[in-house]
Length: 303
Image 1: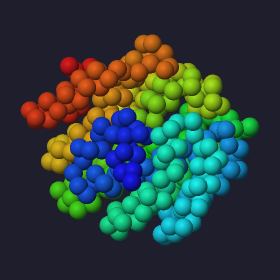
Image 2: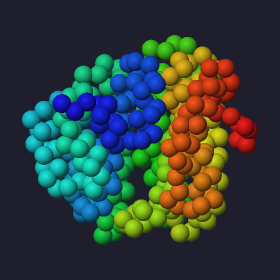
Image 3: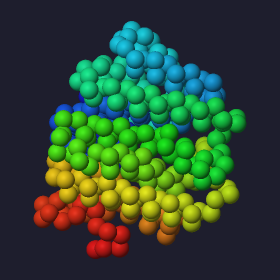
Image 4: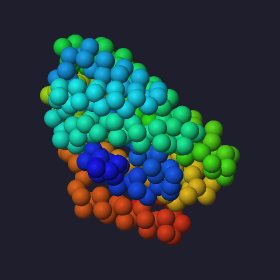
């Protein structure tokens, strides 16, 4: 049987690196939550399906999160798979394993399952709203506020859910809970903006124009940098409060990778990526900082 870890490795390069460092039970909870969000993302990204079919899939998926229905999950996932939900082999494999992911979700402790269910459902609903605006499979965002609303639906809500999972059974984090919650959505927005800038050429070729024509590209870069600064504040708060090392490392690595990616994209244009050796270097640099008690994420411009 395919494991959750194998599904993660096939669907996310960054999260396959960062989720394993989390302490249990948060590690398993976040892994399952990521896979659920990825299922919804696959339907949102399926621009080769007409909008009504994508909205129906998102609604069916939301309904299946409400209570266990193994036979329905098997039947519906087979229908989704037969319709070819994605050109990405890892995403197709994930859709086929939807019943297994749902079974794993329903086995979570109730206090973790509740925020995962609520936030995945909110995100799927938000995605459906943007799919409904598609014209012939193409989505075009109209301005910076529209871009930020989209980022919230697909990533800001993820940041809010992760924060709730981090706070579970960790009374030492209670004093900074309001600070973290206030910044959680911006953290998600930061990472999504970097992905949108990186993938803008490919997205446009597939009918998704997330970068509004009316907004200068420099404004989006500036917003992403401000958001990454907010994400760094979130990480520093965790570190100062004595959060488990795994929480700090999990949140810091995507920010370090996003900073490096943003510099590369600004220098070389969409599609530019940091190399595997660079990812390895940043990972080693982060571990060294945590070993020595230095900030996990240096201030912008610091060595």
